[in-house]
Length: 260
Image (cartoon, rainbow, N blue to C red; front, side, top):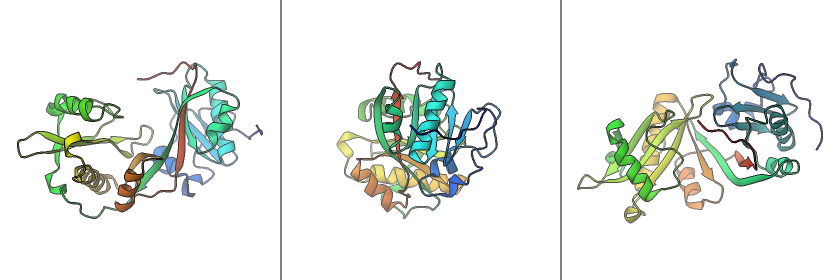
């Protein structure tokens, strides 16, 4: 792998000194990393790429040229082998990192974002906010209808839960507004619909409602879309989400993976 000029410290790197956040494909830096330099944030900067660490998860986020980003991921793992266990980077970085480290659970994503409110969607008027007293109900619903959900009730990152009920008061759809840890930017998560109610647009209504709420309150909403999820891509296109940030995530096999 070609060498990349990398900052000499993991503590004082300025992630925004190259202007990468304004380039297509680098929205994860624009919205995912706090612009204020954080004393407890480890970061790395190279020629055409930057990377930063979510210490709690042992997750390195990288943006920019795939080869330069891969070099930074490898640098992070060499410097912090007992911390770094997984990474997200531009599509193609996984093959380059994989030349040096064994990888598992490689997943292709698209980081999507919008600054505008979506068109009004049918059933949006049925969406209601849900509080802490609904956590048990939400947990049971997600376990039954979306067992691989990314965020559960009680997560410290969640700002808001919302749901839709049927005529009998039963929960038939739910979703959350979480946040990107470094920056605090709103991140939609765990949108799920009752298996027997799918095809009625309830998930679309929740997605539109949560998007509208986030844009009004924070000026932006972001989400992750699996690259091969065609129905989700169509929905997010319809709601105005940008589609220009292909990413890939992977775990480093045998690493001491940390979670909070």
